[in-house]
Image (cartoon, rainbow, N blue to C red; front, side):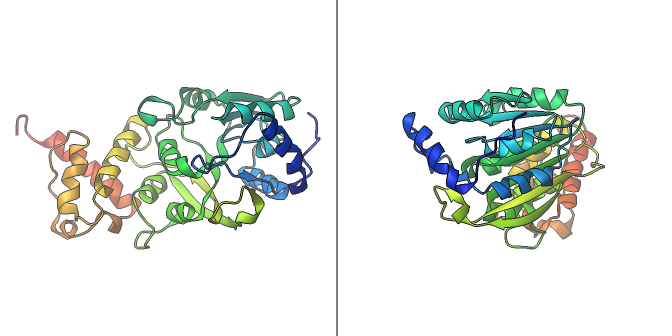
Length: 303
């Protein structure tokens, strides 16, 4: 493969000309902020540590800066981009990289805003490690990460650049202000660690907020039920129900969470009734879900 790498921040003028030629202007509503720091591209790719047997899924390819770094070490890269004009530029710039599959798609174009079918297909066919590495558009970061938890073949690792507040939420511990439903859902299957903050100055156009790089490493052993896609999907619906009314206590929200799974209202221990969902650790959320499922199975027919 060619190693004709972009020169860094100063090279953006060349790309700006290509963008102008096709009439493209970045959309803030889509979170289209191009990361220009080549050193940071390489560092993000190094955190994924992709090898020749590994498959990388990159969501939000943009102009292909990070894609180039990933393709240099990974066996295969699935490069997903919604904007066709950006995809055309990235494909042209990286035409010598033969291990990239280009996918023009909304990453959340599956049924019910789940992951695009091709992402699931590539994940299922992966024989080495499955890695997700991306500068995620701010507008879809949370929903996309929630869907990663429910993917049939879980990623072994994800390294994502997200809005700083979202990064803090992903890594927050129970009891912290930013801990919430997404924190508990993601941490039920991944160890989340915020690696570094990133200034708006290295993006064009510049966002109004700082960003963070977060690494998610899949737990080597998953709790019962979370080792299967169907279980993770039910758990995700249960968690959404619990956190749907954040100011309400579990006395109320546990019934809503159970109803989301067509289960009867659970019988909770007194110690939980007055608590809110954010007081429960990922393990406690899992145990509560499993208890609800078990109570429904044990309840006499027609009760």
